[in-house]
Length: 437
Ligand SMILES: Cc1ncc(COP(=O)(O)O)c(C=O)c1O
Image (cartoon, rainbow, N blue to C red; front, side, top):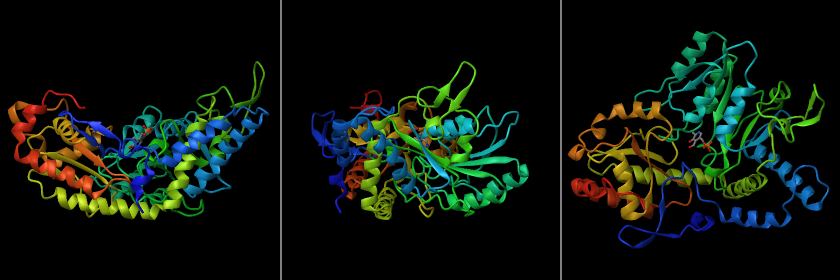
């Protein structure tokens, strides 16, 4: 299967600093993936029938409402949520979904304990602050989540932990957390589990498991723009019962059936939780991305990306002075964080972009606590900068694959890294001040 053909404008060229035009090598898929051509076609088709979702009686409005409601079933099936218990709430992205969850789990007059981890993206850290007593499950020296520490903390709080909230996959190391094992441990101590699925759902089959299973995932969140659909839509999946109680943190359009001066009859969830006119186009695009991924089979996607990862690790290991911040025996998806000793991360990222059109991310990548911990494992790689040049802050370079990347692209990266490693001074001098194309 040629996955590359599935991507819209995959061979589009960019101009390098030296004037050459080349196809871009996009190794920043953990930030955002390009879209599927099928998604673009769907958006174009949909615009012909696009109408209001506010209960209008035009044919366009009825079609639009039908597709929007049908999208909930498509998402629920894709994550194997429970048809009787769970609902799908459409929101802007993972960040908004986690914020919603953090508000809706609050109970008046209580400050429950939420266990998050040292490896989270800001989006699964900041929303919990101020509302709950937060504690952090530790990671070991390789950056792997400690299940011993999880259990120790659950035991220490003795039933007071309301929620364990973990990323399914780290946005820095690509490590896959054993979410079902974590669920078992959390449930043993009467805590619920939320999985931040932003980096999980584009690469692995999701299975929330039945509610009566100890391995059940209570809440799952994700963003469409990391899975081949455009920005602006994402979802929170969780039990309807939670959202039937209480009032939403945002209210207004579509959230109420009736209001008087001093009373409200709320809509039922999920409507109650989706204040304002929703991003219907984003949701329709998401359903098409799900359809394409389902046809491909997530197991096949996982297998192909796993091959890319192993290939890249084995080649990158041969580059002198290149430090990989991952342990390749830990199960992970195609994300590789690294530093080249003597070349600050921001300059390295710029060299790759300018010399070969290779797109990477660099810095602390919205996970400062985790990245700082990883950096201490190889201090050599972040010191000894040439000519006293230091990046504005500590960090690393991250490459992240998606299903359309190829071994040929990895070869281009590896060849260039060999060259940079041999001629560090020259490259650093050339790129220490220039901007990226
Ligand atoms: C693990 C993880 N969680 C949450 C987010 C936030 O995603 P969004 O900006 O789509 O809300 C990201 C983004 O990179 C992420 O990697």
